[in-house]
Length: 192
Image 1: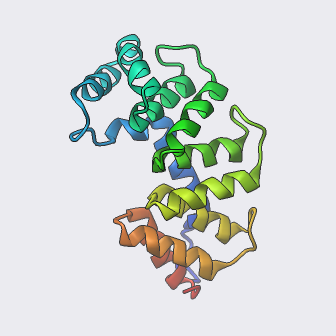
Image 2 (image 1 turned 90 degrees about the horizontal axis):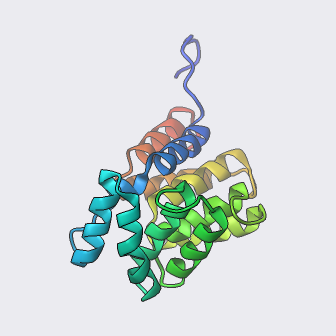
Image 3 (image 1 turned 180 degrees about the vertical axis):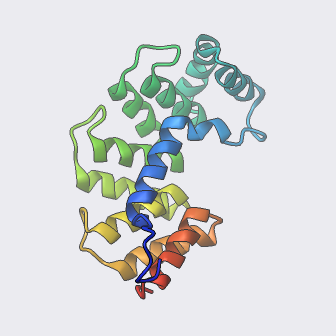
């Protein structure tokens, strides 16, 4: 908002982080495309979406153990949320690591999230930053938003609105509405 207005607009950095939290907790993977996935993976995702978590686990576990990075991410999600298995963030991290070793961008982002918040691992902002950067390098829009937020707030990196703007712009160029909002927010405040 322009000066003189009595309406307060939240800082986009915090908005980006909280939106990422909401997406992650609400099941950002529920919308993950599976059209090109093998039939077994499609069946597992359908079971997950319908709430039949034990069936999802029965199908996903062998796929994950035989190297399917998407199935490994889904196993991480199941352990993160305690769906069809006992909730165990440390086991979720192990599945995410295996998927990230194959360059899976969702697993890379989730590892960053776990290190940032100490979920299943010791809290380590440097490792979180490393994983967020990897995910962003592989096109992960959520990671770009989080990196922009970190630069905006100076958490784990020097406070740098210009660098934040660059991350938000990259996200916007990949279709992120939040990235576009944050670009506009920076320009509105003369930060771009």
